[in-house]
Length: 167
Image 1: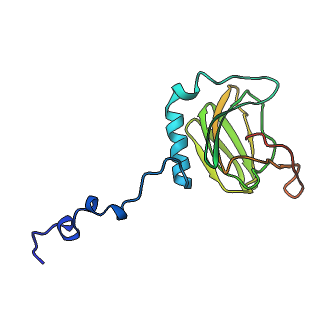
Image 2: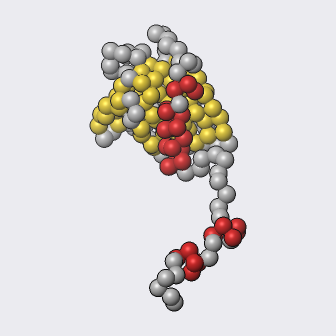
Image 3: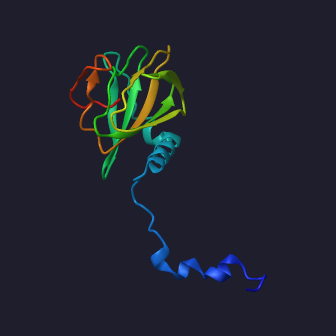
């Protein structure tokens, strides 16, 4: 082997070997790709800011996008509103705070989530999300597969199934 040979010269041109190239995915399929999708939507305020509404009677939510095997939801939270203790059935997800601050309660403790904070979770993850601040908050939620159930938990040991409402 000649010391002047580069790795590219030794291996050949990768673009010449089409069967080794993986096609770009049209839709996300891994946790990191869903986290990336959430970040890109969060960064594009024009895509969501004009849609947000606030409802003092209940949390407002809107399905922003649906792809094969996943859904993207936009939620608003006025001060004092919360999700109740729940899980997402068989769905995994990514929660991203777009504006304001939310508080997440889990069996491991309480965590403040400011604008830009993200939480990725697997199926069966039990939590409660609340707006404990004095200002409204907006969050983005991606569920994969799409949300079909959201069992509520009165206590950690007594779940009760109800219809799917994103949180």
